[in-house]
Amino acid sequence: MPPHILSNSPSTPSTSSSDIPTDAVSLPSTSASSSGSGIPDMWNYLWIPILISLSKELSLAKAAHSNILLPSQIDDESSSPVPRCPAPDPKLNYRPVIGILSHPGDGASRRLNNATNASYIAASYVKFVESAGARVIPLIYNEPPEVLFEKLNLVNGVLFTGGRVKTGLYYDIVKAIFKRVLAKNDAGYHFPLYAICLGFELLTMIISKDNNILESFNATDQASTLQFMKNINIEGTVFQRFPPDLLKKLSTDCLVMQNHHYGISPQRLQENHDLSSFFKILTTSADTDNKVYVSTVQAHRYPVSAFQWHPEKNAFEWGLSMIPHSEDAIQVTQHVANFFVSEARKSLNRPPARKVLDNLIYNFSPTYCGKAGRGYDEVYIFTES
Image 1 (cartoon, one colour):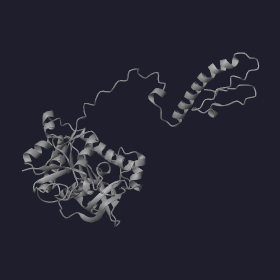
Image 2 (cartoon, rainbow, N blue to C red; image 1 turned 30 degrees about the horizontal axis):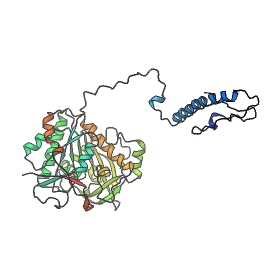
Image 3 (cartoon, rainbow, N blue to C red; image 1 turned 90 degrees about the horizontal axis):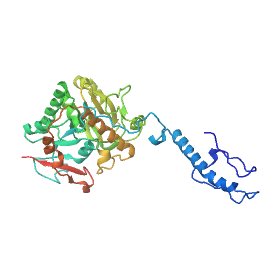
Image 4 (cartoon, helix red, strand yellow; image 1 turned 60 degrees about the horizontal axis):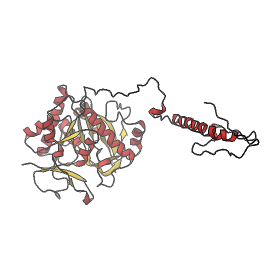
């Protein structure tokens, strides 16, 4: 659109559209008339519509310059007057359910429940899954095996949480569930697994067939970066849909939470044939002594991702001082959760709705334990006979 040139008299300088502010309009004086005719009044009627039109042009130009246009700002005659919502993809499950395995204890060193058969799931893991659009069924590690594995048939993916216990019944149950996850995938049923912190350590022990393979690291209550392996291909991994700027910030800013005493170095993992043939290393991190450990892995052939760090804590835990809570850190949590649930949507498992409802974690109530100022803010506690 050519610039408008507006003037009150021949001596008035011409003004281009770029000189006219869009948020202030000065009307010309009606007293300026040499002939006493109605021309100034006519200008009052013409001036305002012209400025309104010009203001709209400038707003559109400014929006186009920022590359952000609302649908109403795009003159697309080919668009349908009545928007139509696409049909859901029949290959995807839009009501996914994730099974989270409980951990021995009450999550608070028996300050909440000292029953010897108690187990818990930190509520942050539940919120983490729910934030991405899935529901949760608790897999209570010490309930009768036939009950536990019947629940496993109701879910579309499994999450192993952080914790401490690496022996006994808990270890056996983790191993049994892991074998079933692989078997489901081998049979053609897409079934993802996330293993976080202790979960990663247990998988390392199980896959390597070496319960002494873990090494000591000093990474308690520590925020850290993630250093991507050189020439790593992130397509098909948890990082595939991260925005490029956030991927870069992961390497420079402390956006992830570490809280562990054990882990495995890249050298040890790569030297172990069982581990290196199962996992590819995506990222490493360094502890407070600058010792480097593997922080993220992805299975070569299975939808299995494992994290030495805690993606759930940034958005949902407040008890430890070094948990990152910046906007970028929250985006990290959300992207990791989104990828897990997007994998669960590929599951073909469609269990009876009533059985799912009867077993959802909504049948339990969380316990608030954040007043102590450390550890978890909320936990679900289960006591099985």
